Length: 528
Image (cartoon, rainbow, N blue to C red):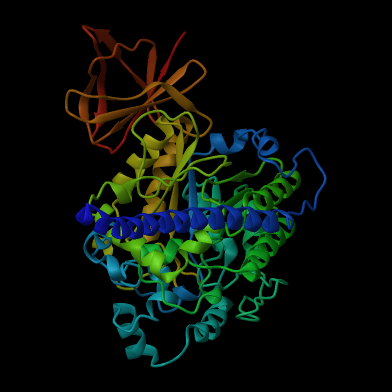
């Protein structure tokens, strides 16, 4: 009895400990839930609709917006990463970002191959960019590039750009109005409290919008809503740092005001946000409603995941450290970094990056990718570092067959905006191919199946319009083209050529003596 009695105080202490631990955990949950509700209430109060029209600041209203025909008809666009980072034009090359996340996670954001991230990478003294900056610019701050960029603008010719994009067969362009470095390419009237006057004095956006629209192209703006380093002093080294940067109300007000200014000044046909959005949903919905009421035929992408109290809490260093340890393990599986971003609550189209779909998608999508390893101009990249034209044409063809489009990025150099020969040659090749085969893409829709194979092993993609089926052979076939497991009938012609004998027997379709070794020939099969 005495032995049993001696254990009772210890049991009581253990019981009190676990009771206290439970109470602490419950308190944390209640504080978190309460904090979330308070944060959202405060953010919602600042939602402001500044236009009148059919769209209101709620999700159900935005979901009524239909994908405009012009956008679904357009299968090829050009994106431009252009800004102060185009002056130094440097990044470490040769290591894909996905590989960095697997093997060098602790400094993946400062050792990455993206020259447009120069402003952040130069702050890490051990990064290749910092070493390059010390060698060529000493201790000069990033903002000093403003002088060189603006001096180069004397040679910038937006009319020439527009003509080059038109010749490349693009239907629209998207330009970085403000990248993560915080420099705005228009004379914004919205004051940046951390970097006053950090914007172009010349209306680069307005000049470019006028030039491309004169060519009959649509004009879109890119805005880095999720990241702005002028509002952050710390160096962003890990992926956790990148996605859980802590932003205050000053940045939320700044981003909302700048995007509203872009909408009012330029009425962009495409509103392309990147990474995330710093406000809660209601303020975002008000902004989107203002956009649709101003540009009814406009479209928004899928990178608008909104801020929450939880995201703010994750900005705390101890929690972010734990998250980084988890991500280090997750990214050891290379397929993780290749997944498309999660769709936001409302969007008009998806944006997988350096990836496409191999099946027909219900929702329209747009692959965005660079020609080289960097989006911004990187002077260290050579011809060998740029994707070959046939691969880019194949991606365009696969996108069109699977209810998508290709948004191909170019990174002009300096303020003069010179498109480097390696990238201009790709645009020229795509333009030459589209001049012959554009009929098979612009204005077409996916067929009942997106692809097949030839007996020679080439992939064949399909698009359709009315009674016409377009067949693109992704290879350099010669002589007969035999499509396996498919019997097609009708009158066949080669785009840019003449009629082609067509036979369909034993589960195969043969286009007789149809090919001469040209890459990606396209055939139209018309039903009576």
